[in-house]
Image (cartoon, rainbow, N blue to C red; front, top):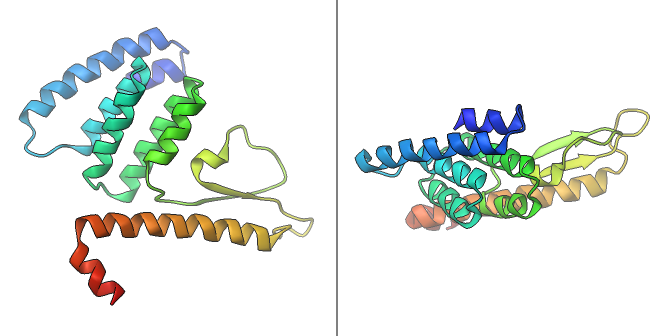
Length: 175
């Protein structure tokens, strides 16, 4: 899958990327036949391959299936960043937005500065804030409120995940 991604990003060749994506799907199909439990990386690989081929609903479902295996947060973030960059390379803002809704927030990025970034930090679940001449946030109340909202959302998604997988534990924590 990495070869497919590199063909898209570095060579700008969607047709070549699609050839490699189809090959990755063949390998994933063979791997799925011998798995005892669904593998998150395989499902994410299939999701990315389907993004490249243009099967967006299938890709989103495969990412949901990968998320359902409950991989570690760093794995989720890695899957999300790769999928997001693939959607960006495909110039498909709707798929990028759908991916942001599909993946749980596992990190919150803070971006400070007075310049514009070459990418949309909103899709990265980031808080971009301006700094004043002394290097401090120009509007700390507003930035703090935005950050609080993102952290609350990330926490709610984590609690929901724990509730689904371990409801008795959550009821003890809440009690």
